[in-house]
Structures are given as structure tokens and as C-alpha cells.
Image (cartoon, rainbow, N blue to C red; front, side):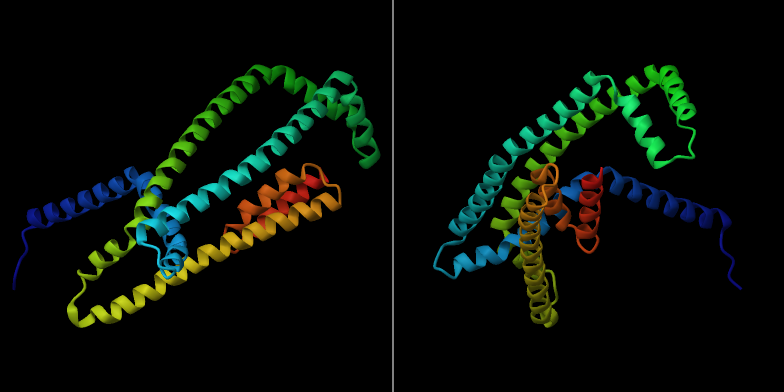
Length: 269
């Protein structure tokens, strides 16, 4: 009968747990970097079918990549230059409306009258008095929280812009280096299984590329049709809501439903 040394067993178990904790901590530390790399790879696979199409038109790889990246950037810049002035104008209108309501000085009376009409059994005066007392008591804390939220939002915006720039650079690199990256990965597979692996990999990457292109196309169509429909029904801020519809359409499965719910709630409010 063979006996194991308890000390050695405990040491190996401790080292295994420590190695697992170290690996988990490393993944958490590198989560942002892995997110950037994964997003860039996904986008590069989405652009690869367009690059391949241009290559079949006798363009060299570098020229096809350059034309594709410039076309994408030009389209994005055109959308921004078209939408941003509308967004600024409509947000300015919203701020003006809120300012007029506040300057009018009858917001509380109008709100109380509306609550009495909608909820006749509700003690509106007591509710309004309670809300006013609570706001007067916690106004300093609310102001501090709002200030911290504004600072956090500004920092998140700057971090998001830097992340978008990093993803753009990585996407350009991966799009230009896709054949060499594939060839390097294929060399790691045993020669007896390499042909099958290459065939499956090409099918998967092509499917991912067409999926990304289809999702973006569906988002554009959804955004344009939403803008037209919201303009017809005279919804408030149709350009803003159309942008919401476009970006949420990029989310698989639940994106369109979630975006539609947000748009409906904003229109009702």
C-alpha cells in the first residue's frame, strides 16, 4: 500500500490554487486589452469580405485595405457631420423647453394638477410636501452625487474615445495582416489535419465577416426607416431616436427589441 506525504500533497494543492488565482487575476487585469483585441479581430473579419472583393478586382492587398478603411471612415464621418448638428439643435431645444418650464414657475402646480386628474384617490398635496421636504434635506448630497456623476461620465467619455482609437488602429493592422495571421495559425496544426482545419477556418471567418456586414446593413436600414417613421408621426427628436435605433440594432437578438422599447418610452414621456 502506497502512502502519500501529507505535506507534499498540501503544497501541491496550495500551489495549484495560487496558480489559478494568479491566472484569474491576470485575466482581470488584461480584460480591457483583451476586449480591444477581440473587438478589433471581430471588425477585421467583418471587413475582410469587402477587402477580398476588391482583391478579386485586381487591387493589391494594401490598396484594398486602404480603400476599405477610407470608405468606412468616410461613411462614419459623413454620418457624424450629418447627425451631430441635428443632435445639437434638438438637445438645445430640449434644454430650452426645460428652462422655460422652470422659469415659468408653475411646474409644481401643473404636476400636482396632472396627478390629481390621473390619480384622483392619491393624496397629492401630502406627496408633494413630502417630496419637497426630502429634496430640501438631501439637496447637498444630491448635488454632490450629480457632480461626481458628471466627472465620471466625462472620464468614461475620454476613455471611450481612446479605446475607439486603439480599436481603430488594431482593426487596420489585423485587416492588413489577416492572410499572414491565418498562415501562422495554420502552421501550428499537424500536417495530417491541416487541410481540414484550413477549410473549417475559412468557412468560419467568412461566416463571421458576412454576419458583421449583415448586422451593420440591418442597423443602417433600421435607423433610416425609424427616422422616416418618427418624422411622419412627428415624434420628438427623431434624429436622436434614429441613432438609438441604429446602435441597438447592432446588438444581436435583443438589441432591436430593447431599442424599440426605449424609443417608445421616450415618445410616451
